[in-house]
Length: 498
Image 1 (cartoon, rainbow, N blue to C red):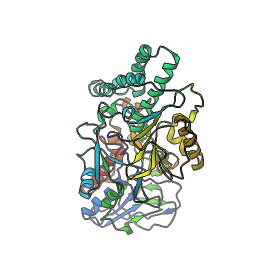
Image 2: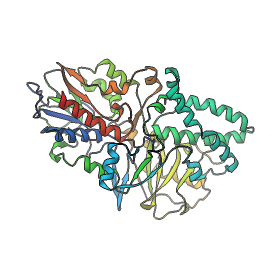
Image 3: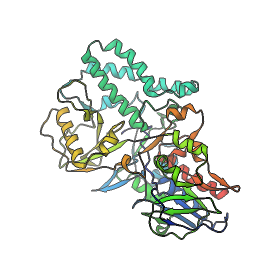
Image 4: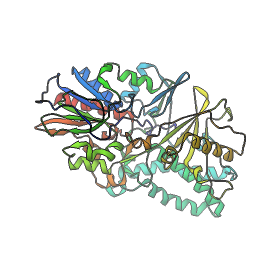
């Protein structure tokens, strides 16, 4: 999506799981020398950044355990024809950050876009369709006028309100505003149906896709924390190499022999004088003094209580339990040739209730965009219940569902099925369990910085032995590649100083 704050810069790191089968031995003693043996769990951006920084600092014994057969985690560029489909992270949130500097040095920046709601609006830029229920331009204009000031209003309340205000959900606050709008403008049931449909699009695109969260669980404090939405520092769009070039740059100084792919970690035992890493396959005889854990928050939510021995400190487990972790989804639909208007930039489907031939699946989709470097590909965005519902479908079922949607919404029965679909099922993959983190209502109600609690190292005998990195451990730019990268370097430097 063309969104700066769209924490679609999301991320996509790697995790680890399953049952203990093989063991790496505990070292006989701990050492703080540059010869210390360091294990890093996960070869996503945070893990790669940590390893790269440790090597820069002179550490010579660094091993990354990666559960899957590739590096990158939630950054997942897939080669396709002349470029890469960005299955995970796609954008860079602003210019004042290290990822932008890397992309700039690699000369892969393409353009930038301002995502401020008053300067970019998909209901204006897009070609939108609603099947048998026509959307009158007057209705669109009224709705756009209604939503235009809301983001600034919410942000003001987030920054100036009290703790109770910051723990309010965006869904609740919007509901209060929408109730007043509908009372004034939706005099007839059919008008209410139209505004409800546009409201659903607003919910799905502006909030649930940006934050990977159910907006009824998305706390207002996210607007105060969000450091990626400055309209003078817009989203940066890369060329068709995208994050492939960034990954290559970050990992350039890491020996390939130091990255152990297909090496899933089942548990981490830090009860002795060092750290024991238990793998699900393949013997590991390496001894480790310290470990940096960079698995996703989604993975920790599912496995943290069995993954660590001794159990994690109560404050850290509380952070894992209360912070939010949701999902967005992407579908790359490949066609033999474009069937859409050549002037189209994006296509929005607006599912209006009580229209003939509408289905429950219609609301799973909202926006489809063109790929600038390949005219035969549409990128579909999913949010809210969409990712989990689509992830549970076969490719054939997805193809049938989306083709039916297009034919009914555009009232054109000749629209072909895609010849190929590229996707990654983030919600059903236990290494991820979703895409990125947010501050939930429950987290906001604690009044604590749970991201900081998640980042805090486990200290044994005065030494940080188990360290934590990843986008969810960054207090300000969680949910971004920037946060993942910065957190990895942060923990490498903490380890070196400690």
